[in-house]
Length: 497
Ligand code: GLU
Ligand code: ZN
Image (cartoon, rainbow, N blue to C red):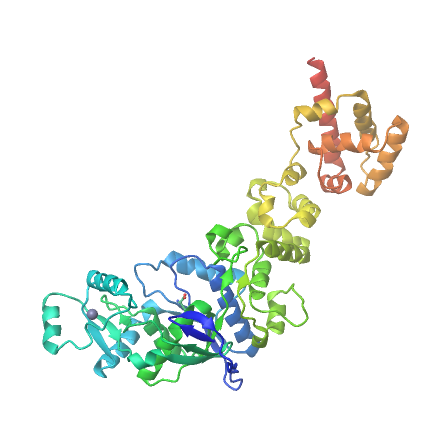
């Protein structure tokens, strides 16, 4: 693969995959920046690293990259951890970069001493101005090396003016044509990487991403860096830092990007794109994990429905596919239905609880029975919150005037009254059909002429799940009470005329 200025320009004929070394215990990491919720792209990276570590009996490190003090927030750190836990992705070790600032300092100082880095006194305004001019001249808008060769005297002068320097890494021009071997993609070549001397420590003394990442991956013994494609152009910079510090770099592999259904970069526009939002919409973690796993990985068997445990068994790096992957909400809903179908009744109730707040007083077995009845039609648990069928299953319906009117003709009333008179305490839902047939025959109407008024009286609606199922959830006492209430409502309406 060949890249120019960080942009993909094509594959090289000789690209080979560099296999990872299976004799080395795998230590991988997920390194989110807590500047927002856990996005599905990040979650996919976390999942693939986790699966790999679990598969190989390796170690999965969680590293919170929170050195950008202005943009990082502890609530996001907490949210990311909650989201990972919810998905079932447990970490073996946890680090916060904000607690490791002296480590980064030490290595920046070493690079300064060795002349591999230098202080830059340019202000953001000066940099912006020069970038604009470079663009106007048709040149690459990268740092122009202004402070590279400042004399000791110039530096003193700037310091005396109260300027606080950033520290830049010195990139030799000839280093910019570079390549590395990606363990998923083979050789990745850059004709000329568009980067000037890049900042490794900001003027406030905090490290930048590339420096902190290298120091940590080294000190934490990370053997393989598996992350998304958008970091490909950071990789040479990181490799230069390893070289400058005299360290062996880890192996790097980059996963494909994730697109929305319209094949544009996935964004909020497409719908819920954070794990937290998907959770709130009532997707099961099993379904989210399952869909994430299929974003760039597929087994030979063609199978698509997996639990996390099954994924650990089935996962392999060889089956990773590098074409852009579409986050497909339809597919996610389909997977969610598959995983909903696998839950035990108890587990279904447990998962549904957060969406049933408005039914807090309803007895447990009634809830469980209602969920069983609705389960086949559910795509997400979020649908329960306003589910029209759930309402009358859990509380008697208010009969709308149209329903009362439809129940007013003598045949309808007779149907209800006859069914009611034959509902003894020993009645079981399987008895409903024969009973309806019997009453229909007596009244000389089609069975629909009995089923329909029954449904109206019991649910207040004209459509819904099979009546036998509804009667099963309600139980005979409740069915009787609703039939009586419906007959009373009809009587009252007629009395009022
Ligand atoms: N904090 C970086 C990010 O969230 C980590 C990238 C990496 O894995 O090196 O994009
Ligand atoms: Zn400068």
